[in-house]
Image (cartoon, rainbow, N blue to C red; front, side):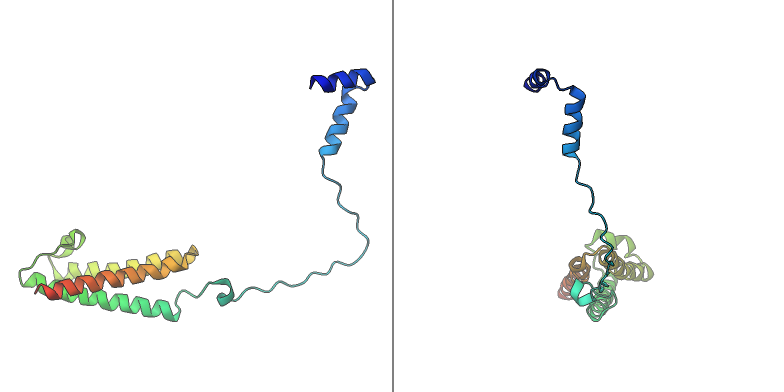
Length: 154
């Protein structure tokens, strides 16, 4: 800054003139003036669901996954109820809270199925479509494991 001040004083240019020149140099150029040519707008086509990677929430795959999840939750309910009636014990601490009655056990597994659909819908709305499908797949896997374990320990 000292060198610039010395040059400004030596040339006899005021500091205000230098500041104006510097500020004008930093401004963007003005927009081009209109030539009077008409502006043509081309319509933008919305991408279809397959192009955008999106899909309807209640498509065939989700319907299959939700039905399979509900079926295995129902099977888990039946196997768990039968094992508890035969004197077995519930190993899942969440289910053991509801396992004292058939209605409580049914409410737990119905709530699990509703929770799977709800969480999948949340992931669908936030654009996480792989996670949307993964929720159902994980629930199906957990239910299959629970049914297999319950059937093997009768």
